[in-house]
Length: 409
Image (cartoon, rainbow, N blue to C red; front, side, top):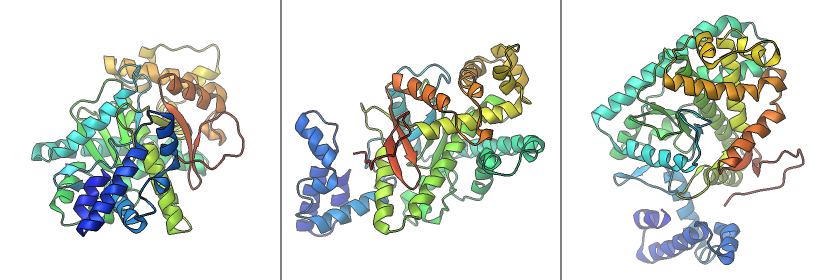
C-alpha cells in the first residue's frame, strides 16, 4: 500500500504528509469504480490524481519506491502494492471445472500465506518439489530428444524446448526455493532479485491448491506454484508443469523487452503497465492474455502429441480414428486415477479445438483455437487481452486491425 511506503521510506514529516496525501489520492483513483465520476477519475491515471502535480517530486519518489518494493517482504509481511499477485494458471477443467473465477484470487491469498511460512519444514517441502520437477523434466527431455532432434531447426523447435532449457538454467539459481528467497528478504542482508538473471524463477510447494486450479505461475512473483504431491513419474503432472514453465519463459521474454526499452521512461511505462495487468484484487474480474495462454496450451498439445508418438494429432485429423479418455492415458503412459482422468478429459477437449485447424509447427497459432479459448474464458468471467512484447497490452479482438495505444488502469 502506498501510504505504508510513505510512512516507511519518505524522510521528513512534511514530506511524509505530502506523500501520504498523494498516496491516498492515487489509491482512491485506483479503487474499483462505483460511480460515473469515480470511473472517470480512475481512468485518468496517477498523473491526474489530486495532489500529484502539487507534490510531483515526492510522488515520483513514492512511485519508484512502490515499483522497487512491490513484491518484497517488509517488516515481516508481504507488502501488497496490489491486493494479490497476478498469476497465469492451468484452469480449463483441471481437477474440476472453474465456474467461479474467484478461484484465481483464492490462489493468490493462499500463495501469500504459503510465502509467509518460513519454517524449515516449509523450506524442505519446496526443496523436495524442486528436485522432483528438475528430475522429471530432465528425464522427459532426454526421452524425447530423438523426436526433437528430428525437427527442423527454427522457432518451433526452440519454443518447444524452452521450458526444459529454462529448468536447466534455473538449476543454478541460489534462490530457486521461494522460502529461501523469503528468508533472505526478511533478513535484509541483500535483495536476492538483484542477483537474478531474467530466466531465473522460484518454486513454491502448496499443501492444497484451490478447486479448479492444478498449477500456476505468478508473473509478479516469478514463482511456479505446484502441489506438494507433484509426481515426476506421472506424465499428466509433467504436462501441467510444462505449461506453467512455458508461461515462465513468456514472462522472461516480456521482461527482456522491458529491459531493452529505448529509454528509462519507456521501460518504466512498460513495467507499470505489466504490473497493472497482472494484479488481481478481491472481487475484481481476472484478466487473461489470450495470445499467451493459447500459445502455452498449443505447445502443451504439441508436447503431448510427441509423448504419444503422434497419435493425438492423428486422432483429430483422421476421421476413422477414435479414442477414449482411458485409452489416451494408456498411450501417454499414465495411470487411470481420478485426477488423471479429469485432466486427460480436459486435454482432449483442448486438443479437439487445436489440431483440426493446424498447429504451431506451421508457424502460426490457429485463430479458431484462440477464439474458442477466448470464448471459454470470457464465459467464465475473464477480461480478455493480448500482450504484444515490446508494444503493449490491448483488448483481445478477433479483428486483425492496427492496435490502438492502450493502458490498463
